[in-house]
Amino acid sequence: MTRPNLMDKKIGVLYGGESAERQVSLESGKLTLEALSAFNAVGIDVPTKELADELQKLKIEYCFIALHGGAGEDGTVQAILNTLQIPYSGSDVTACAVAMDKHLSKLVFKGAGLPTAPSLTVDKAVSWEWVVSQLGKKVILKPTCEGSSVGMQIATDEKSFISAMRLAKEFGEKILIEQWLEGEELTVGIIGKEALPVVRFSTPSEFYDYHAKYERDDNSYFCPSGLSDEKEKEIQAISLKAFEALGCKGWGRVDLMTDNEGNIQLLEVNTQPGLTTHSFVPMAADVAGMTFEQLILAIINKS
Ligand SMILES: Nc1ncnc2c1ncn2[C@@H]1O[C@H](COP(=O)(O)OP(=O)(O)O)[C@@H](O)[C@H]1O
Ligand SMILES: [Mg+2]
Image (tube, rainbow, N blue to C red):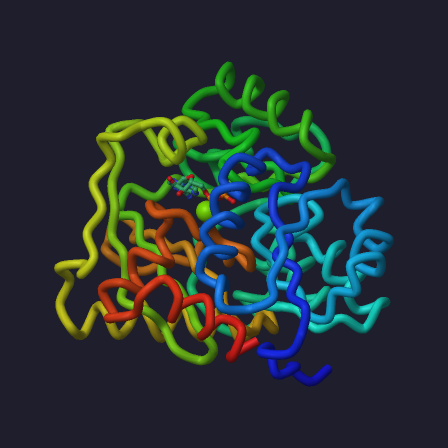
């Protein structure tokens, strides 16, 4: 699909949605609409099953997807837009679906020779002894297809492992058990084929869980990262390779951590990251000298 000249097209900004990240998306969408005020853009917040009808009714010719998680990030909305032949921002169906699945993403990272934390994917009960023998005495359990740290819990003994397995199971059959990384959290926004400055951050919480992500106001964010030029470039290069290996395009955000030895390990790629005033991509874009309007237009131009 070719990108339309937006000046004479009707743009739909898709926001809100039905995922756990609805509130964040409402803010991303509102800011995106403001940034596109010079264009003929309207906000669209309808249930996914009504989306196709609404787009046709409003005669939408281009969609900016400001949804996060759920149908807006797993390829569903992208598939609806493909069917209607409406061009849109960001990654296509397949890249979204693979990036949303942490198990599949890890297979791709490993296949591409990229570093990622050691892990096991299970769909039935396994013994804590076996997990310890494979990954060590501290692990984090994640449902394979969730975001926002939903259903994630740390395990350090049999009791906490059983409880973490039970929690993760509530969100899907497959569970990713990942070695606990003691190092720093890093995230890298990607626009087109370029990486934005690295954001390094830390939280007083045990990990960057839902509460830390959206409710704490005492996390520390560093952008510029304060890392050496060499390290910054290495992190950006790994992030770009991960983004490309998953077949992502347009824009996105890569989450990474360092391990006990300071090695960089990939966690995941987000194809529909936040666009609020305190989201990572706008933060890094600002450090790179881009206004929010320029960021939104760059995402459209590179998609
Ligand atoms: N292997 C790990 N070791 C330590 N902390 C982790 C690990 N994996 C995830 N985390 C913590 O959980 C957060 C969310 O993990 P992530 O894989 O990015 O999933 P989500 O899709 O929920 O953002 C990370 O930002 C980090 O704080
Ligand atoms: Mg993440």
